[in-house]
Image (tube, rainbow over all chains, first blue to last red; front, top):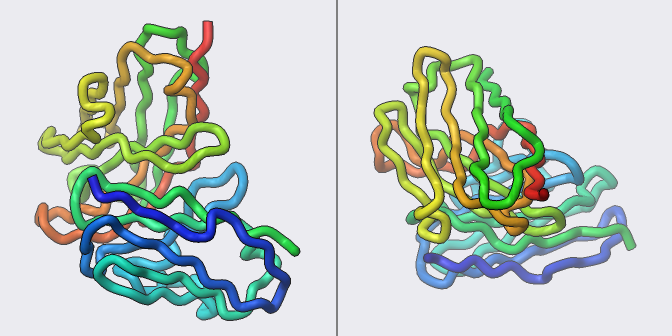
Length: 107
Length: 123
């Protein structure tokens, strides 16, 4: 199985801050990396697919980059509605696997 | 617009079988691969497996011995059975459109999810 490791596991930030979350795969997964946002009591929502493809309707303050084993999700200016847990997920090979999540909290 | 809805018992006794169904609306179930994913309370996401309308399945090795998925194209539904459940199987269970495309090679993401259903294993 491909292990996905996110860092940090949690962070505290203020509205307007630039936030970066890192995801590392245990082996190369080219660009088969997706990012999800999950709010309490809700299903995950796809933000970015194929490492950098922003989904329709997702604000442009979200961006993704990386390839191979190292990937980054950046929120350029954190907004109140962005406080949530973020997960990366690889779709290179089954079993599909997720990172452990990064909880973004209000400072 | 494709929508997914999970249904099934919210409480299952230890050692019994968990059974859930996902109803697909807005598109034919034959167009895509479909997955089950679960999330224990306060924890992360675990992929359980996928199924295609033809009956082709792929299960997570960690659960393979206890999982069976099936599809009913006449009802546009697919189902999950998990046998010999324990408290460790307590989780929110989601159905979702699988990353694997109809060509069996192109891989995308879990782009559509059901709202999830909480299943508690307890006597």
